[in-house]
Image (cartoon, rainbow, N blue to C red):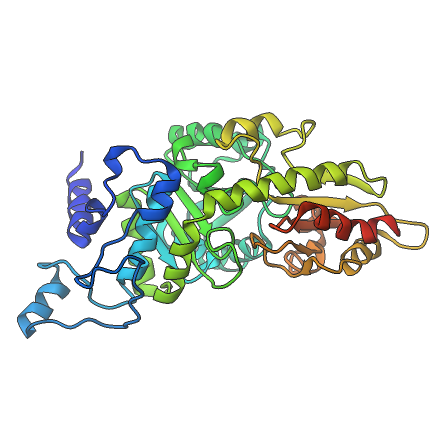
Length: 424
């Protein structure tokens, strides 16, 4: 171990000993649901059973010397809620335990987490290699802002391992992918990408927003950093915004420094909401996946649907890979894209809009991962800022609809989708 590594680890340990003093002893090999309910909490002297919300911007010291010791690192503890907050720390500890990571760093939003990743691990002259199949705002961030600061960005098909290998350059520092991806739920071979990255001294960053640790743990498959838009399934009810990164102590210290300096901090209230959301994550994801599997079967057999993008279907090209990477049996997530056939009077876009507008229960919104089923037209919402060429490369066609299958009775979801599909 190098001297710099030793110094970095020393700083991490000095920063926050609570990472190694969890209220739930994770060394006792508790199951995921127990971790989701109990990990990360530190009770105050009040003895509260539920996690407290620390709505404070600052903290009080016993003396000027005590304040100085906190600021210079001689004493551990909270300094300012832009840096650390007990409510945020509870969420971070619990998510890190669920992802089997050493540490998590919470951010104000999912895009804030991606920006933090860029600022922490990339600099001018570096190369970022990403999948074509990404959320539109992620592509916008990479192309419009990282490129502005002389970070080279290129894209490949997420499912094409040869393309990944050929696109690696001497200055490639980060490989970034979503698995499953937005909006086509494409799957990356995380273990392959991990080997490729390790052979070339590259960081592998995986957005695990759609699968969540209930279905998939990218760190166990060899990824270095996991990204979350906590706004989605970690909350699960569309209430608040937040994001997170999970990984090793050393990598998360770099991310923490960006969040602390840049003010990309999560609010205490939002952290409390996410902490409570994690308690039911596994149970909700089981129900989401059961509904999604039935909805996908309905869509794939409907005469007015040309293609269903969902790895839970046995003939999907990534079905075997998704089955291997997702540790929940029968769990393939609950996001899918499906392409509507044009009719005699409606082109692809108009046909897709007709299906969306014909729904009476499903929510027409760009959010996803909600208890409520949501539907959107990616080409004119989440990916509308991309050029037509970029949308084509990402597989976002005019007839494509993205569906986030919720927790309503599955028969009602199917009936609502059928209103528009049957009348094309």
